[in-house]
Image 1 (cartoon, rainbow, N blue to C red):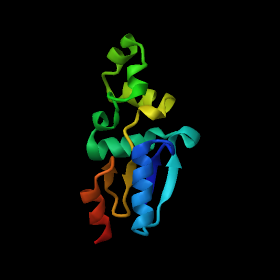
Image 2: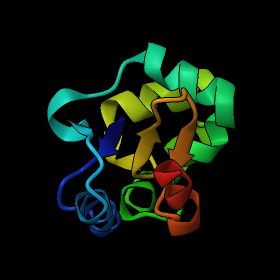
Image 3: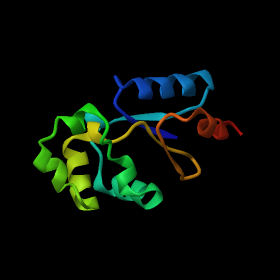
Image 4: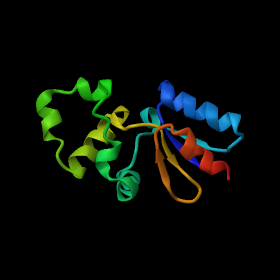
Length: 115
């Protein structure tokens, strides 16, 4: 499994702790250091929709100029922004071994990985 996020994010920390506690192997992909490819964003969008990954509640979004916020109206616009400012992506994003994508920390959903 692969977990995407930012190491100092509390939700990412909670997720990583959950994986360690449940002795699940994972690879961590740090958005800040490694960025995110348009191909990966496209794969996620195909599974959950691009709007799902755009975090409009976080500090990064709130710090954007209002004009820039209004200009994010398409998948292409969102992907460009996500690649320039990866902290605007909701996190963590978990790619499971079965090929599904889990967004955020949801213990019930994660518990399915133990079965």
